[in-house]
Image (cartoon, rainbow, N blue to C red; front, side, top):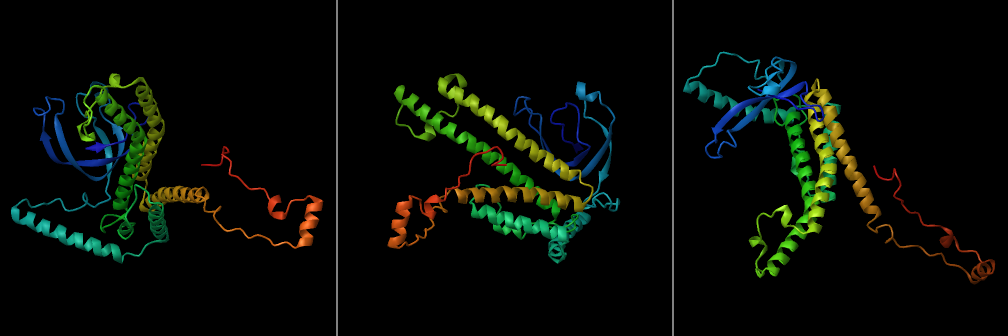
Length: 337
């Protein structure tokens, strides 16, 4: 079946291009969850689909069944263009497994042999520079240096790694950055919450316990008025800061899905990698400006003769070094982008 992105603000409107999910595993867990969860499914993405028309739009309101659509499968893998005659006996299955292993080895070898286009080479170089920047800045979320060698830019899925594997890698990176930012915003509040719980336990004569024995859950009404206010403010900040990041991440992937060909996907990926690289480059520049590195440089003092000192004292003019005013970086409207 097809999974398509919902419009972020218009209910009942979907993206024209979605991904094709193939069901691999289905477990019924209704008895284990008291019917709160019916099934747990495991899927595999096998392609893209361009949607043309919803055949039963009334199902969106009554939810009696899935929406049925008319669409075209965009075959990026070759899985739908092969021979339809499949032998289902065990011997054929073993042969297919052996062929898959051989094909995997061939794909890895083919990836190294393919010559990159100028656009692919530019994407590869930009990613390499990004990874080096991440390590120089000791970013919490970063790619390993080894990932540069396995960063694929090739077309299709006949080679491995390819551009699609790199797109999946980039999506995971964006998700981890979002989680890291969320944890960073929650850290200060969590420290205050632990301090509050410890004081509350001391007050009730239950002190001396370690952090591991603190309550695993606490109700909003049990918090102090100050913490309640901070929690409400934190939720507002997270909504304001994280929601745009999540939307940007989702729309970026949707843009790649809708790309008409490999060249357009390479161009989009390079745009996203370049944007992240420029962000870190700006961060590195600002870090150098405010780290005191410029102020620590030795200053050359001009030697003056006795006549020059007397003449300067009489004229009451400051020396050249004193006349130069220091430059400051003001927090103007366009100072930070």
